[in-house]
Image (cartoon, rainbow, N blue to C red):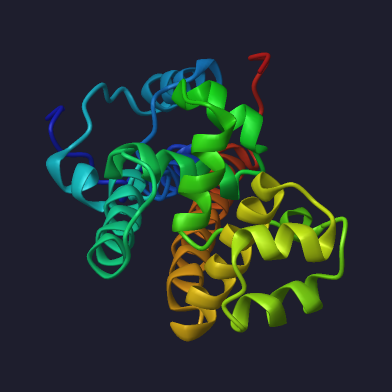
Length: 233
């Protein structure tokens, strides 16, 4: 038998329908690193078909979702960051690559302290970098004063000292909330374009990951459906 090509038709053996189904099901499984389960499934296929080689056409047909797109996601995020860098003056010296990691961790739900540890930066640096990217958290606006009045005072070009006196807070507190409000204002002036782009990129990546997992599981289920084996998975 030619080990390079397998024609799953024409056999009169009783196991041929199962072999055919297994053959075509395996074609739909995405290319992923073999774990113990998929390796045993491959061994079953080889035992039943006497084939130990995957043909070139099979390699071309098999899915490419798994593991694909990770680099593309980072590239797209970095593209948005570079676009923002050209338009705005960033407060930190973090590289585009590290800002990309910040964005990804932000969308994974990491807090500022967790991101700071991952980047080996101070929490203050992370907060400033995050606001540079228009990534405002709800709790960023949990202020010890009326934020609406604070916005209006900022619009009137009140000085930091005057704001501190008016709202009975320290000047550092004023500067902190000024950055948040300015980040929101910048985002609104850009019609939330950059935040929406981050949302879209990360949503696409999450959907792709879930589709990959579903396709892989469906392929394994189809491949083993109707087969009787004492192999313990």
